[in-house]
Image 1: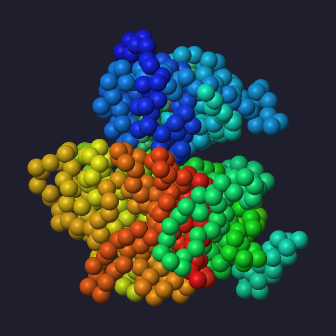
Image 2: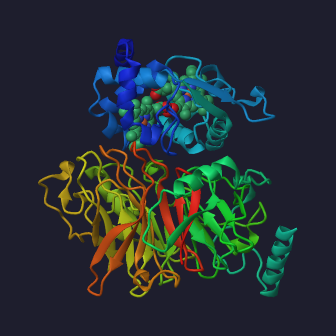
Length: 180
Length: 416
């Protein structure tokens, strides 16, 4: 499943073409990828490869969602690359809440998602500033198999409900700023 | 000082009535125990003035309404969704699709809120979208997969540790495997029969056939009702896609509700719906119908195995009709009495956006319903949203409140 998406990521997207296409995304994700509705995640400043892989997964049906499956159904590989270039071209900055130390971050997550929720690898997403319920929903989707990923499925299965909520609250409390 | 005095007054009143936190709660309902609490004892207060409020006020100047009506910023409330006005008219509880419920207080009764803070911060909420009140002052909050009950919430919300009881314990509203984030904004109201009615959206664009038996049994893609001691749960409404607003006609007691219809069929179909239900167990067509009489591609050509009630009023496609209330006040002109005020959240997959407005539905003597725009102007010239209305409720003085989860605000509409 990831092999296909890596191939798409190699298509070099045109951010300007992506900006035009993003008109159909902004009601939910904002023009720069800052989410406008609670069910949608922030996508500005995510790794380009991650964005392309998820859009492809929605189109192929390997990741399903009532809204995103409708949105992605008709996107071509080139359009996906363009959109990934547009949203991936945003710079994401994350701040921990006042008086909170990075030492308190959930240790099981930081190697890939960072203490501040900014991803440290190309195929992992940022979690900074996502709301608690979005993060929890995705963890449960990995746990139940609705969403699959070699690393995340096992990680999600190893967490208790309370640990999920605590990790979600940690990342939700970080302050995401997007700039272009 | 003011706050202290009024809460002491409230406590004195409660003591005088012989009430305590928990009084009058049915014996079988379990009090929420401590391990489900976060131990947070501090409130989060939301600033009401400043640049943010000024920006919202500038938007409100662009809103058009029939002559004589006025719209003002009532409160800044992040992620504001469905509302429940306390029976005393002191506090309005506002749900969100995140993890907070807000308590909005107008102590000096100048019709602008003085204080907005989170309700019961020591509790962990998940999608607490739907608050509703019983006449005797019990607050219910319908979440993703739980319904809590707070006795005399209007008096006790000043404490971060308010007593909570399970009406439906976590994991029992729907099977845990069926939980989703989308289509999970629950709405509740207490009916004229004293039962609580709760909407349960189904998570798909069009529900697949293999899910239908389970959904019909649980009431997913429907509206359920039960006694306020949690007993006698039953499915009241079938064939719903995702209803996020309902209310009972003040005279007939019939349940009217909005529904959000299927996406991906084109800009102009299927229509949105306002439905009228005349008896328990009626079926409203989903997933065979995508909205109105438009058949879904997934079930095309298949014989519809149930008798279907068509909508009382069809609304423009994709506008996303959400919260609604019958107008029961005396402030507005006579023609609005018992009319429905409802919110259109606005479309997301239409070439030109529609919605983001408050609608009014008049019902004539024959029961024919006609829906027209009432307050609009939240879409700017570039097709961008300046606000997205979610719910409408009556205030005691006959004005109405409108919530907006994009701007994060409540508006008050009055008439002079």
